[in-house]
Image (cartoon, rainbow, N blue to C red; front, side, top):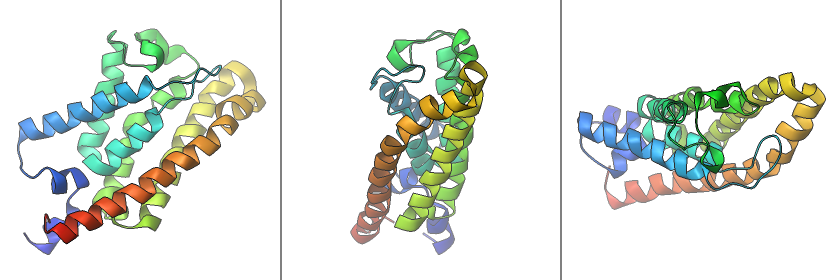
Amino acid sequence: MSSAAIRSTTLADALIPGTGVARDLLLTVGGTALTAAAAQVTIPWHPVPFTLQTLSVMLCGLSLGWRRGGLSQLLYLAAGAAGVPVFASFSAGFHVFGGATAGYLITYPFVAALLGWLAEKNWTKSILGTAAAMVIGDGIILLCGASWLSMFIGWKGAIQHGIAPFVVAEIVKAAVVTGLLPSVWKVTRDSGAI
């Protein structure tokens, strides 16, 4: 394998070798399923529940790359809009996109694609790069989510209920991913898989 191919490989490509539409489709649908499962790990909080969705969104982008990561989240949103109960607490329906959490949800494809693009630029191969990607992703999700939420409860309420309660949880999620991805890359390189 050429050094150029190694530089542009995503973690999914390194761990699951091969090519083809079927493989890409399975990885994309796997990312969708991961996000749907993560949405069900919920701690009720009003108006925005605590879930593991943001962790899944960023992990999909950082491990699948920009195309598959972004598509996995578009598929997640499309499934939920079509009535498949994939959103938090098994909710579904197009009406969710008019609710208080819509600002968070609509960022998912963009954030996954952006972080996937950064991963393809080798950001996930270092602790600093992975941490920076996580901060960027979290920042976009929280700021866009709170901006939308502010239309329902004002800016002060959006900061108090849509950003502040989530900061510690997002730091923990970022720390987990920041410790995990560069380590997996190192093990993969050391084992000769790439």
